Amino acid sequence: MESKRIASQLRRSYDGQAWHGPALTELLNGVNAEMAAARPLAGAHSIWELVNHIEAWAAMALAIVEGQPYDRLTGDRDWPPVQVTTPEAWQAALARLESTIRRLVAAVRTLEDAKLDEFAGGAEFTYYFLLHGVVQHNLYHAGQIAVLRKADL
Image 1 (cartoon, rainbow, N blue to C red):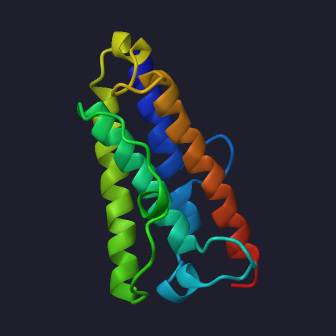
Image 2: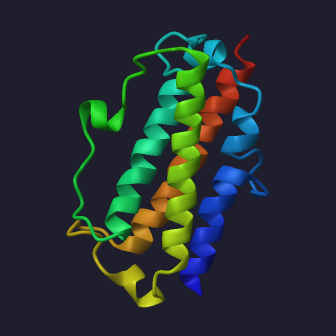
Image 3: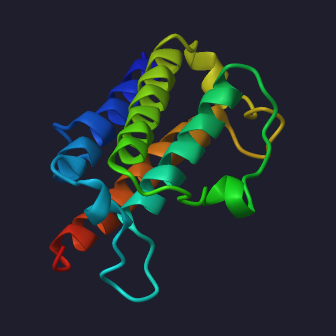
């Protein structure tokens, strides 16, 4: 039952009907490649970089849930660089994020609740901590995207 509740929170952080306000899809709706690549705030990441980063951590969590060992994300694995800024590349980034989140939600729904108390892929934290962390991570960066959307894009 708890795994299904966590899966619901993951889904809400991405799809909507979240308590806090707009979810990732709601904030990304209408963002084009030019807006996604823009840097309206000095020293801040672009929306595109945030999308790549959110997807990287969701993919890491999915790999752990699917049985892979924990492998800390650093450097370009943590913040995958934006190489090409075409509309097609932006749509591909959004599609990767959607696919990864949907696969993670589906995988979490099937977890036995007892697994939540186990260490995640050999890490020093549990699946429960990891999965709640992904929800929190999504929402933290959703807030940054919301600010960037208001920063004269």
